[in-house]
Length: 161
Image 1: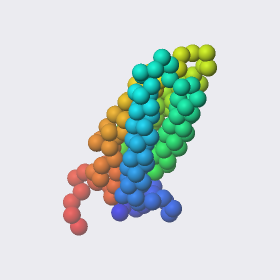
Image 2 (image 1 turned 45 degrees about the vertical axis):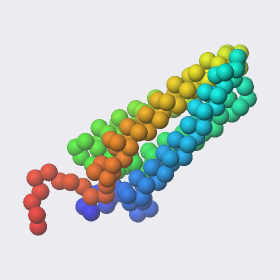
Image 3 (image 1 turned 180 degrees about the horizontal axis):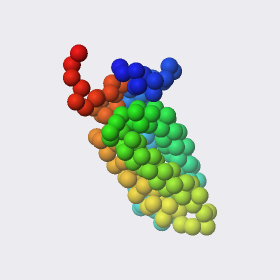
């Protein structure tokens, strides 16, 4: 491990592999929760209007769990990306932008007015859940790989020795 990377990692920060594993485990839990939510709103499609309280409780639970995940991911993954030149800082910025969008969309659903249609809320939740599932899959393909999230820095034009 290079001294520069060691300095970025800090004493109490987990290794890249541990950070990657923790985030991937959270992704499994998020997938399950989002799929359960999708099943709930899909099951409600046969009714005139989804049940108010269960739907809103589900949206709030998903927001709480997802926002905590984003915070964990930012604490574990962003420092690794920031120190991985030349592409890491660009990946970190893209991840921050994605997280800001996800937080805003979840906030919008949680602030859904009581006098607005629960059916529309269910539809919007379904769209957001599908988008979040795609975001998770994209992140796993493009960012959370051992080629990207690693402890060792790759130095271009470095010769052995």
